[in-house]
Structure formats: structure tokens, C-alpha cells
Length: 120
Image (tube, rainbow, N blue to C red; front, side, top):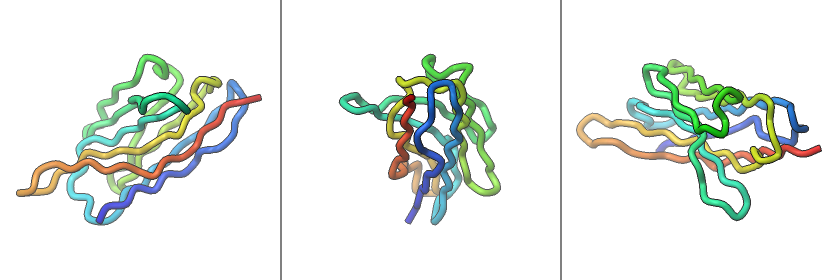
């Protein structure tokens, strides 16, 4: 059983900052990638940022320069620092991991989501 527990969402004014966290626990194997996705009302879930086990990062163009993804491999936690937030960043943010189990292959896991609302 694998659990991903997200925290840090909330209401923030435009231009403000939030830091999301996602802690993975249970039989998580060897985590390769830790990612953040988001889904706004009426829209499809979209990629936000990813970080590899070697700390290589990739960002969606819409958040590049404003968001920073980091991870603590010892604690199996991934963070998303969000600065200069805009109303269009309003969405439910989901944590996702791609992990590998020896002899069994790779598996995907998703968190339950945390709401981020950017509004004045």
C-alpha cells in the first residue's frame, strides 16, 4: 500500500506565494520521478512540474520562472514552491510518483489533491 499525502494548499492573493508538500509512505519501492499536476474546474488535468531521482527538473511553460520543484529523497517528500501566483493558477494540485519495484516493474500513484485558490 502506498500513500501520498499533500498539504499546503489554500487561498492566496494574486502575487502571493504558497508551498505545497507531498509525502510518500508505505511500500513505495524506488521512486524515479515525483511530479505535480493540476486540474482547474472544467479543464483536463495538466502537467506542472517533475523532478527525477537525480534532481533534474522540467516545468510547464505556464509556470516556468515562478514555480520551483524540489525533493527530499531521504524523507520521500516532494515540494512545489509557487511564487507570483496568478488567478489562472487556481486548481486542485495533485502529487504523482513513478516508482519501481525490483522484479515487478514500475507503478504510478496519485495523491488526493489539494486546492489552491488565487483570488483577491
